[in-house]
Image (cartoon, rainbow, N blue to C red):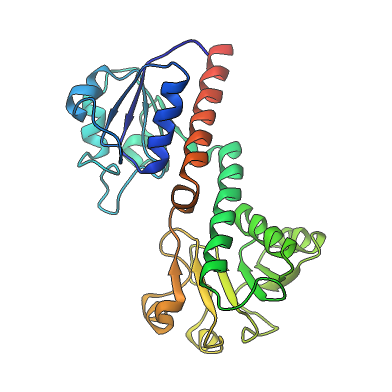
Length: 276
């Protein structure tokens, strides 16, 4: 790809490694508000000169500002030149309406690779926290999407007994074709008391309180879903330390790989656009 100028604004260690990879490839890059890197200039100085702008994945903090900054989407768009190419993750309605934006978290190649990294991080967390081995353990994975299936395969490869819960007929077919056990999400006809660990990938309440009460006293709950997750606030309190939120696993467990994957997808999209 021809050398182009990049601006990277905000984010965690993934964005730091992304910047390092950009610089190693010889592309000019200006940085602001990236954790672990010195600023080349504050956002208000860099954004008016931005050609290709890369924002964090996901892009926003809980307060709706861009991660690592105090900027809203409105403030960001007011600063960048018309025609700036913007890459982000889960844009709000304001940023999504900008004609030059791409949501990288909607990109199938990146979501597939991110699912593998998330599954790897979830497995590492379980192996660290569980008092028992994965080999021979009983695990429930709630949800048969990319992350759920990637995780189920890895657990099975380590000798675990794995059940995946789902609701759609096509998901049951997918689960059973992988020689995994299946359950209906929310029903759990085979009960819950046998599980050593539950991984939830579904961002909706998937246990009733009376079902939760049947979990063993040692059962861990690893929450992989985005907000609101799979448990009500009062049910999280019931589990106490056994409830383990696991947000942003790729950025926490393998930030270098995650950052390089983001950049690879940005390059791929830009090259496709040039070829059109």
